Image (cartoon, rainbow, N blue to C red):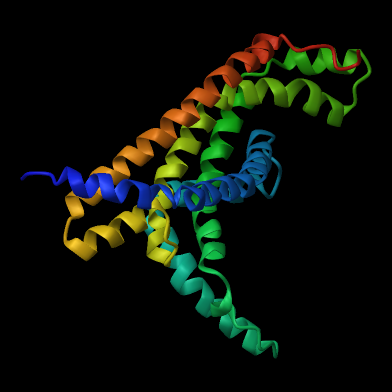
Length: 240
């Protein structure tokens, strides 16, 4: 099958106009997922009584289900449940009036939170117990020890996995089109449908994703090098 490169050239500038939408979906979802992922990782790592088992079941459940199913639940089932609940308490708030992006953030955050949680948990395991003892010896309390000693080292160890998760999230945002959010893949599909040039549309969007992912990798590489100072306990004295 011959590719119409003329269509690709014409579609490319139209598709890249939707890069801000893709980046918005990615960044906001990540900002939601990161703190939640850290909290789940801490609960799991410290085996918090009554919560650790719930977290592990949740992680296993999310890792064992496809993102498409999670989107279906959030975008189709959850609004119905919320609508019935609000009616039962006498509220006339219309759940379906909410922006589709809100449901997209929620749906995409489910799996991203688990990815970050597992990455941070693995990073926490790499932190030597002697680091905590040394921090306490110089007068740091538990909170100071975590933020100045433990978390920097755990984050440095987890950073490559977190970056991979961020890259995966960029690609997964293509599923937001199922929730009527038009991003780069959605726009490409619309353009391809107008002229029945789906192959060319997907070639176009592939180029855009490659550009985005290469950009992320170029940004992440120097950051990872700077974080290497925290590896192996090479942490600056927080008290100084």
